[in-house]
Length: 241
Image (cartoon, rainbow, N blue to C red):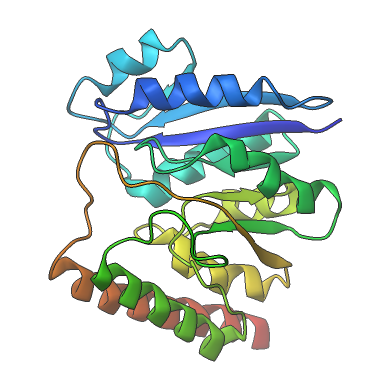
């Protein structure tokens, strides 16, 4: 039996977080022979997200300042390590992820065939495929990761992912701050973790507003590129010392 923690990052998701948690609870009730818990990391939301989280009756780590997605998720992973969970699953609070695919993410880790599992909308190209500009960016990140570390992840920006115990320990020590999803592939490669993608269906965001849209997508691509290259240089430099 594995102890599994579902981590739900939340920043101003008052429109969706309650329904997301309710649906998540219902889906987790069908997972047998494993213990599944939910923790929401409220990243200092300025709307009434906290009230909606409390209404859903789940444990909440309520951050006093906004840390961004990287800091919020690292806080969740540190909690997972402290409480001795075997697997941690990131599940976004904006309604894009289908909880019925959590078992799909868990299976490779339970079977010891992967350390990191990424839920990808592009393996079978079904469901919501994101905007045109974001698809260009995601393809670019796939190329960047392949070039730097020879790992090809089709959906490198996916926030639907699962980590085993060894990876949880690693990301507790360091996790990219601003754009952790694409940059962390570099980190996982350095530690020689097995990273695989599994097909999932994504849904359009049900509420809130994406922080990456329009011309921000180009700036996002630039910053992730710089962050990934600097992370790669830092890790390889430390390895050669």
